Length: 238
Image: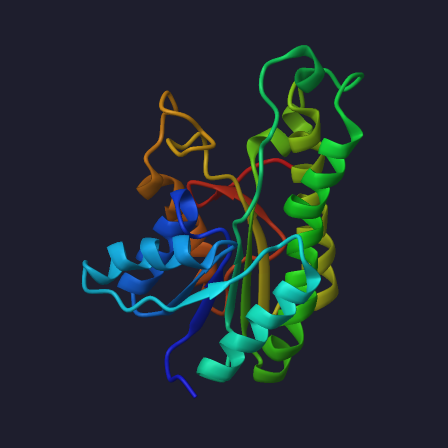
């Protein structure tokens, strides 16, 4: 069994997920890089190994229940524990064409795919990991959300993405309420507009900045918050 805390980061072969793995590894956690494509995951991990970091890799497709179960079992088999879950994997398939930007025209198949990836996947991972966290009396769950999912500032455009990030925030609140205020902390984070493949080159934040709050939430102390929505390590409206 590993002596260090073990974290599983989904969708981590690039962007914010990869940077979360980097930052968690640097502060002493075993950060497992989970990627749908195992070879892409290994290639991404190699860049971190070149920085002196030891980064395990597992295959994980968040849209496939069997893949989730297998990945969680693999982490348990390798390290005997899983202390931190970072639900980072997500899709944004909507562009700026009318059928993407209008809720009246958004394809239902796209909504269903976004639901499966951005909300059902995190739910399945929570269901797979919380029993072990409860048994060990410790857990940190971080759901990568977005300001696009804030009801307080909800606007038009990107309806599938907006709806399912709002649903992810609801999952955060429900899970935190059920688990209570003590051993397992469950929070959402808005990383801001980050320069990634999803965010695009004109985004205002670096991946380093975008990952910071997720890393903070993944390593909260015993008296840290739960059931909250954060940006820049400060609470924001739902």
